Length: 254
Image 1 (tube, rainbow, N blue to C red):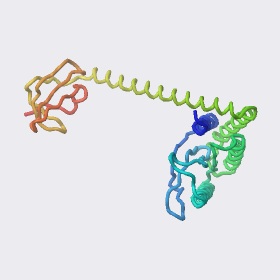
Image 2 (spheres, helix red, strand yellow):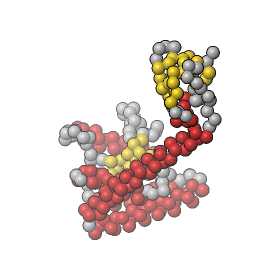
Image 3 (cartoon, one colour):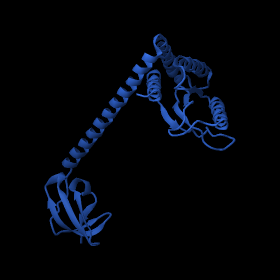
Image 4 (cartoon, rainbow, N blue to C red):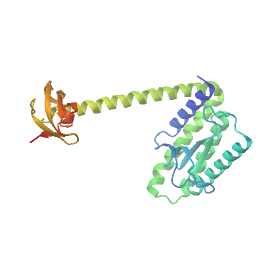
């Protein structure tokens, strides 16, 4: 695993652990985050709206992009300053995170921003109900960050490697969960289709499809919801459908 890839994965895992329980929005451009000089939207890599904290990765270049010129670096720095000012105006604390820099230094910066976010939340005009919910949650997140920083101080390289593997495992687990959920939903759909009363069709029967228009059934293979029904439409195009998918779209023709 390359150094850049490892560090990026490690920081993904760090943020996932620290902000566990908070809603996260990735790669977003809020309506209020518009550069007044160019009128172009600026991006945040992560936004935690409940904590009023955002993260922007810095120090990285796009794949295949060469070394930035001094002018490009200056422009990028100016955008970061503008991004930070706009976040502050809108009550969001921005973390400028350099995944390739000293992880302890970056953790210190992250913890400082979280402490500032806690103070801002306590003094904000947000409803008391929200404060009572999110102030303890933000305090617990800061404690997790502090504990992780202490672990990291003993052997930064080893801890970052472990965190990177943790992110890979997390992604694999998420992919498996999504696949299982998709398969479960598909099975529920098939079960529902089989239990539904399906219309009865016969070969050579004229029918009307809601999209393809009138035609004649040429053959039916199988029975029930999984039956395949072939229709030769008047436009001289034959199509084959699964019964449970076409039942709501096909009706007896004149």
